[in-house]
Length: 228
Image: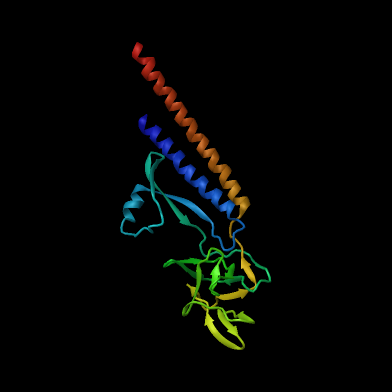
């Protein structure tokens, strides 16, 4: 009975984590380049089989029990390469990637990849994200040229007919191209996320009822059976 209580309670924890992830997906449904995330659980046997696989330090695994079987709750990026809709903005500092790949940006020595091509020219005259991260080109951070400039489909920054530098695209393929004056939208389907949220809430409530039922049974065992 205690095992059943642990199973139901840990299931509630797993569903709480999933609810947080779904809420984050919905909150970022209008964030350019955002990729939907999901919670993935697997059996303890699967964990042992995958023990040799290195887990990203950014992932915080959680161990729980579900259906009387230990499971691991693991946050993964789902549909990581599926593209969101591309919309025109008309801004020279907006860029969308069509196809595979991502922009590389740095801040205080930390490098990360992003599909969010909403950039600006910072106080140093360099191309940067709205959070101040430097956009990387072939030669590092790029000092944007004065006057008229443009970015071609292969990422080349052209000024006065000459190529100044080329925006770095990590994981690009031959068909990858950059579209200036556009942004890639999120690949989150809000209707799908709302449906998942309702389903997950129902599962949470079911586990909650199991916990309450077991608690009531234990109360009777302790306070009533002992009197007989």
